[in-house]
Amino acid sequence: MEPNTSPDFSVDTKTDGRGFSHEEIVVAYHERTKHHYHRYAASLGYLDWAKQPDPFRRYDGAPLVSLPLPAEGRELPFWQLYVRDSVMLTPLSVESVSLFLRYALSLTAWKQFQGATWPLRANPSSGNLHPTEGYVLLPSLEKFHNLPGVYHYAPKEHCLELRAEIDPTSWASFPEGSFLVGLSSIFWREAWKYGERAFRYCQLDVGHALGSLRFAAAALGWKVRLLDRVAGAALARLLGLDRDADYVRAEREHPELLALVVREEGSSDRTVSLSEDVITRVANSQWQGNANVLSPGHGVEWPVIDQVAVATMNSRIVTNEEFSSFPSEAELFAAPVRSGPFSAEKVILGRRSAVSMDASTAISEATFFRMMARLVPTRDGRSMPWDVLHWRPRIHLGLFVHRVNKVAPGLYLLARDPEKVTSLRQSMRPEFLWQRPASCPQGLPLFLLKEGDCRALAANVSCGQDIAGDGAFSLSMIAEYLDCLVVYGAGFYRNLYWEAGLVGQVLYLEAEEAGIRATGIGCYFDDPVHEVFGIASRDWQSFYHFTVGNPLEDVRLTTLPAYGLGEAG
Ligand SMILES: Cc1cc2nc3c(=O)[nH]c(=O)nc-3n(C[C@H](O)[C@H](O)[C@H](O)COP(=O)(O)O)c2cc1C
Image (cartoon, rainbow, N blue to C red; front, side):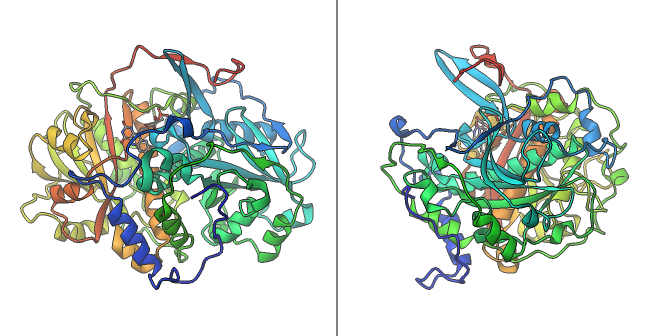
């Protein structure tokens, strides 16, 4: 992962040259990056502050196009984002693109403590290191630019950097009335702190960012569709990430995903594929700008990250999966939610991680059940934000319930695909109860496994982080791991993390709406978590932890506005 190594974006052979299949490489990576009680996954073991990566990528020399900072105080209620077709459709304009990026990927505050200042963003990130970079491919927009273009988003300035102009005839083959969003990762940003496990965190961050994009689009009446027909190599060319000359000493970006942002829903949105010819014409455009160097040297390499990145570059196409066995909205929510305390803007821009929880406040059962219901797609398969993914849920929740009124403390299971209850049950401890909690909405696949105080256990398996025991509940996201790798190929390893990140993003926003807070937990002891639930095979694996509860604010910190202070940081 030396910055100037040109990554191999073009790999589509089934093995890595040493005879290992891509699936074997993924399994080996996943195993070696597990945290154990007696041994954490390999990392430097200390923070080399001199090499701390710059959290802001810039393309020096690329023309900077300012986005008008949207006026604050939009009153659209948060709950309305979930009600299909209820938000007025916003026309595509400079202003609406600006609002979209503001809600999705912008800075939301600067924090200050003892002379140190650091920014927070709408999308969370492990260690606040922000490996995810955002791109938009826009048509020509009045007052903005008279040609379609590939733009890199610069969150610190809330500006777009014009990397390449696209000739209008090429743009004509892009889906009409829509635009594209691309995400890439700079693995080094996470690897600097977390070593080999960093690839997992980068993928979780991509999932959070995808969620952030989906909620931002919902606030404008738009929809987002993940395009899995554009392969990694094609995406690298489309975003200019394969251009060695633009990254000479700078850290490379790795293509993650491409999504279509649409105003009107079309049945063929998901199957959009860009022809080789269009991609070549974009790639052959005049590109501008040179990537900045994020760290003065790295000093350490983590080759397994590059290996797993190559092995997971492409997955097999997931054909549309059907959702007829899923509950309807009426079955999932005792009463469909049509009111709430906060605006979408307050929830989205106010989202923060709790740093610690108060270890006392209980939440109501209604709040708990509503949060769980938000995580299950509805029968029509189109409930926001799950409509962004085209596969049935492969992430289920093993819950540690601590403080929910009228819900007994203990271990619970939320099967996010109701048809997976039987196989989950067969894979877990035989003594588990599998009882439906009283008053749980009829369509919510939630089960009590075992009653008891699991506060210490939850904290213990989350790397001893008190935050997992001091909230209302915490959880482990259990992935249908091996089956997905077999059916969809090694590339689906990333998809599983994206889905987990998206689950996390919903929990973050739902916690804000409920007046409490959440925190993603990437540090947990993998196999001890499996042991808690009695998972003995590798079919199911824990991919992410989360905690939700009443936060303790750190009053020593000062909060400054995201923009308008000049050079805050
Ligand atoms: C993938 C991921 C893993 C995280 N892991 C932890 C963790 O193990 N412990 C923790 O206290 N916070 C964790 N966080 C929270 C981040 O530290 C937090 O998102 C970051 O500092 C930015 O702050 P914000 O969420 O308030 O914007 C994690 C966040 C993400 C997205």
